[in-house]
Image (tube, rainbow, N blue to C red; front, top):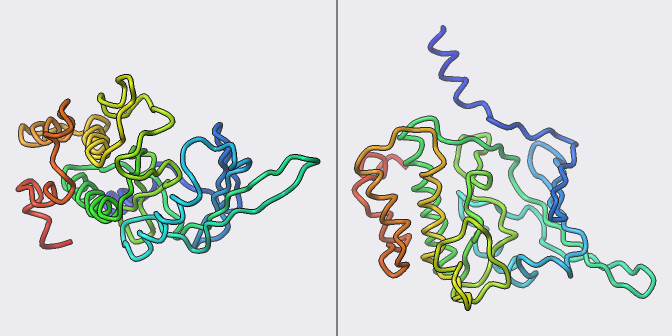
Length: 240
């Protein structure tokens, strides 16, 4: 019975998402937990939002609509226009399915599965010409079925375009002047950085993979499609 309790405990969220609550962030976004099936993300004054564009976000959500391991739109995204005097305010709204929670991997096998699912999502969006640009554990979720879900698309951009902002955790080439285009290899660097944040003892093989993903030279980082064929995933590939 005690072993059963321990097994069940691993499925509990590290950080729960309270239904019917609204979480507000400093960048102007808010998330409302509407029901057990979807949440609503809202960005007020979206015409002043610097991290993405409505056209890009429409394209991203269309691209991932059939992707099992990506946060998909239940409805939207859409822009609502309001006038305040002579000022026009645009509000961005998207209903996202399903309600997920944040949970980092508890062991190396869970880490492998999470990264495998992340790379599967990246293959899809990179092939469609998009990049995520905000791959952190805060944005890698789990749903009620225990599936890993890549979420928080609102920093997404087009591949090989020069960003109008630079985040501190981005790949080193983005911190040079003039700022170069953000490529698919910059997303790969962010996945490598996920390995820096786990509270797990990494093997020599895992440390080597991390070094490949975070190589200072972006041309030497493997693509998402190449990483999916890495031998590190051999023991889990056939069961996914």
